[in-house]
Image (cartoon, rainbow, N blue to C red; front, side):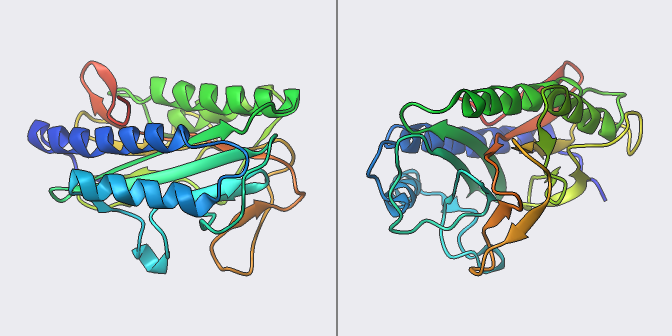
Length: 248
């Protein structure tokens, strides 16, 4: 069941998502060669304490940290560790908080120093795909209009959409209906209505879309070892189009 949100509820989500955006911005500024990914997690948790909000991911289905940090061929759910960043890495960071009972969720992928031309293109295309999907999140469209827009941008640039993970509704719960695939034909699924709130999050591979799970039980990597990128925004569908909640 899709839960429509009131303006008051969306206002609370806007606060939650602004905090998420601030955390990602502050953690992004720490990205440099030699930094352990645990340091990124520690900074995210410190900001949550300062802002008196609860990190959304820590403990969710047993996830052990607050921030997901996925590097290079890691797609999502990378667990922060003593691993140090290196020049040329792509670092995807996915983060969420809960504020007064409402959730925010967003993700960015950041280069470490100089990266390859292919990696630069992957970042550009994945972010473009996110905004193409958001542009379709308007009253009267169907859910898969979002999916199709994402897939079109990604595949027209020679990359692949990761199909095992999807976007999702969000609000009083971190994950709500509907699921939002990043591929598929347009014009299908529920009709979009004002008050829907959702996290749109293309995950893109420079190679194929197959995945495998590492032994930690969380980190998903591309099966062929190719680079991956991930961008995500939480949005609200309004009569005036999509309102991006998770940006400063």
